[in-house]
Image 1 (tube, rainbow, N blue to C red):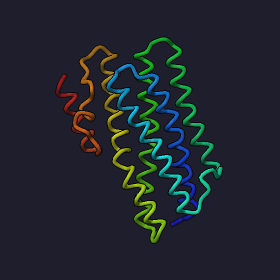
Image 2: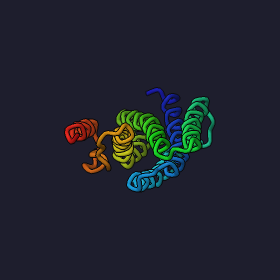
Image 3: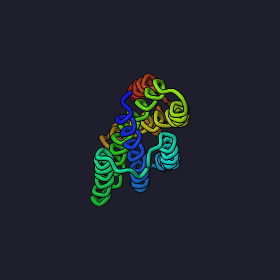
Image 4: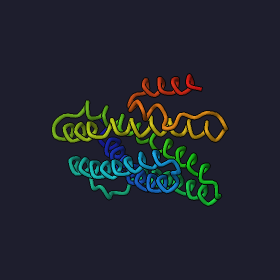
Length: 197
């Protein structure tokens, strides 16, 4: 295990979750559909908890959660760009279009988030001792939530686009109705959505 790279991944993940709070705050402002707004408010609360969990992981690894490494600046810049994109969309005066942009921004952010947690989980399997225990406990708390964030928002994004294109949308999307938390479940939900048209 490359400890330096693992430490960097932990700090990147923390920065990304901190950016995720800002992204969800803005996405909630963009949400037109009340079910989507409620979903994102839940994800916002969970993301705030993920920040706290990763601060705990930093402490277990002897890392300063405020340590600035070059990768954190990159992660922060991407997150701020997503917030700016949502602001631009809201400023254009079309709330439905801004909601779709917010969905796309959340999907982009959650794709990285999902990847980070998968990598952290793989690392926890190779570690031993207190670091392994702390990282495994964090992953156990967060991974299912991250799966839900990604797969459900992808479903919302797809269905809102379908609606905007003038076709029959399934809202809330099947991913939410079926409480999908796996790639296989998401694929099945997408097929169900297509079959219903």
